[in-house]
Length: 342
Ligand code: KG4
Image (cartoon, rainbow, N blue to C red; front, side, top):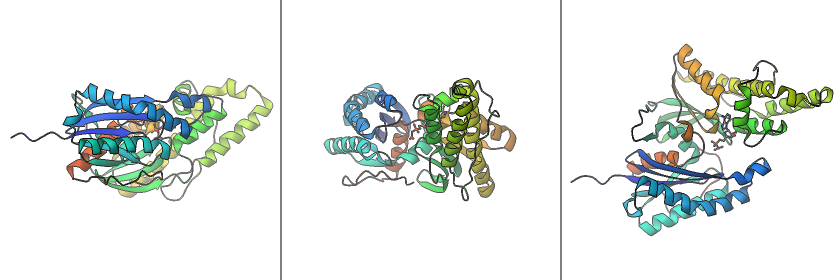
């Protein structure tokens, strides 16, 4: 008799994207995400608005994910969900919905850590993909709006934090500097686009060092702010006249700081399989730095598909798939958590 396939519905609602995905036997069948434009007017995510939008989006997003996958609720083996870290009000929408579905369908709930999800995005494979996942052990540079970390991964469920930011995340620093320049939100993709036309060596900003493999970006943010404040005194149109050079120089500073840490981690661990994860991994200069290490330093590099780098439920399905295979289920009374842990 043929074994029943493992079919997982996964839900992600930790910040401002409501996402649902269906995965069967480790192969992604669908991944549907509703983003929330409501935050653009505020230059950042407004938690209360995010929770409300998740409430409106969650049912249609889950329905669409099941429909696109051609999977009926009765065929599901488990429901996977991001339990944290994230915004509590946002998490509660997804977690409560997932618990309700698991109870209603009489199937297990599987919890996923959002950060582990970003890392395991490197393992997502859809039908027909010729994707090669990293072998264990590998190092992962996790760079998103909320986190910046270097993680050693020894197995799908074995993560060791080697270093992390002691203040702002890299994406946050980019978004905040973009805001100071009067660019839109999120600033990361705008900086990336502008930087293509600018000179990365036009300006220099502080590149603070933190202890060991940790990062610190708040000093850079302050240095950028003071630099603009002084420049605007003599030329009120300074930002307008030097937008592309500012973007390119800022981007170079952040990428240099990230790669400085990663180079050190590769040297210390001797691990040359290096993966990238999180929203900032969409950045052109960062991807180019990875390619440069591949070509010049003999690293084997792994970069997830663009659509799996920002918040999505496909990565949560990947975490849930590995946990399901080990029989690791989540008690229904386990609460969501907001703190960053891995
Ligand atoms: O992973 P993500 O979607 O959300 C978190 O879990 O935090 O990452 C969002 C971050 C934002 O800071 C955004 O500005 C940044 O990723 N980002 C980029 C690019 N695309 C998104 N930063 C630099 N270059 C990009 N192309």
